Amino acid sequence: MLGAAALAAVGCATARPRLSEPVRWAWTGGVTSTTANVVARVEGAEAVALVVRAELDAATDRGARVTATPAGDDTFRFALSGLEPDRRYTLRLEADAEAVWTGALRTPVEDRPLSFAFVAGSCAQTGSAHEVFETMKRHDPRVFVHLGDLHYEDIDEDAPARFSAAYDLVLTSPTQSSLMSEVPVAYVWDDHDFGRNNSDRTSTSKRAALDAYRKHVPSHALVEDHAIYHAFTIGRVRFLMTDCRSQRTPRGVAHRYRTMLGKKQKAWLKQELLDSKGRYPLVVWVSPVGWIGRTLDDDSWPGYPSERVELSLFLAEHGIDNVLMLAGDAHMLAIDDGTNNRYANNGRAGFPVFHVAALDQVGSEKGGPYSHGVRIGRGQYGLIEIDDRVHEVTVRLTGRDAEDAVLIEHTFVLPG
Image 1 (cartoon, rainbow, N blue to C red):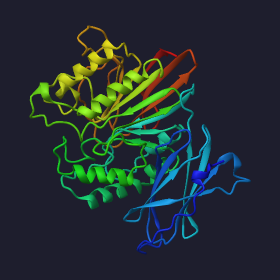
Image 2: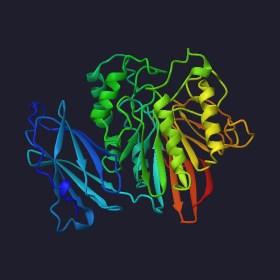
Image 3: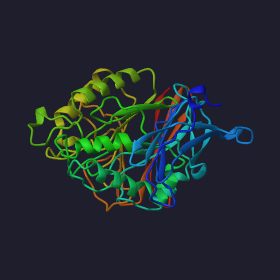
Image 4: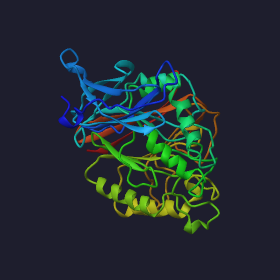
């Protein structure tokens, strides 16, 4: 049953009546073992409510009505609490007492063994209705990790309305909304959904992008006000979602002074990595941009070589060997088992890297070389399967197409 904190009265708000069909979109995220977030845009309703019901109790439980927090422009945020670990819940969004959207979510367990699968991808044309999103949904993943380029509007101005319109186009896509109605999303941006191509912290879009993210995205708690990095846990897997745009210095700065993450985020990342040692068998470091490569003027990590070496040395010096990096940006599937990830200057192979793109964009290749090769194209995504058997954890990576054919794969085992 839901706890007392979730049994709040119906959230009511006055909105301007404009459409006969009030719900524009809704999606879920920020899911923990006991909490979750839902964000929806509902137009023309005087009263908005979210009814949450434990699936197993559907016959007897009328559900709890969760208070809405109006976020402006007909957007409503719902903070769910008092949930129980590893349970499925049905969601019903009501506008003026009529159901206008239904969804579902499943809470994880945290800090104890759990075998599960999740999907990951990046780079889709604005409002894409590609079938790849339906293909991902069929795996019943615990989370959809989105590594950026949610849209390609390239907004290069402080224009909140343009960002809101971009979210509308994405979240009203029939295939994307179908996936996001039942699979929680963990999302960090890249350049095209933060600002212009190859944008950095000097982008004039930064304030509007941050405000729009906080308004529209049902994320886990953000670490600071001026960036979107955050972390969460499923089973014994720790996810570190890094923001590789809003804190990065321009590439015109000398290499030794460039930073991709900024001082605060880098300190947070290092502390998370240290804390994970001996606690989590696997840490998934989500980097919207690629790691492996040699081109010093590159927009990805190769263009920030000093910081890449610094982080690699940090991992090596502290004996942190439980990291898997997921990367986006390049419109390809690629896997490196660590063979070509040798930036710690100790001659040893580093952590594996898995590129997961493009959901729906023209193919491109960046960086490398990669031990398992490259598959260039659109309609591609990554499936990551975790088999946690207490004393060891098997991680299977498969890069797939919209027909669910396996294009590239790699399996590795970590001590539990």
